[in-house]
Image (cartoon, rainbow, N blue to C red; front, side, top):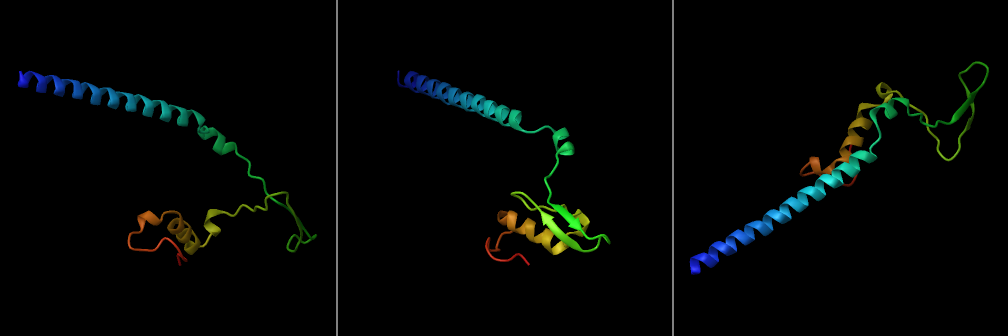
Length: 109
């Protein structure tokens, strides 16, 4: 009799745990599906236009006279023109959990 109760308890416990696991799996799949649906398509990255400020130069094209911008003042800089130290500092500041033993605050130079 005791053996039967124990077996019934184990079977019911297994069913409850299985039901919870399947429910969590289904909720996880639904959550990921909603997130994926909201992601932009890769084609949108190719056609995305970044708003930049308007620069007005003198007639020689060397001296900047005015820079007109709305809410954002942006200038696109080619990746090769960015100093390596700045690239490394950006990565270090963005991912402090990947540098064990280093503080997550302060300069990254």
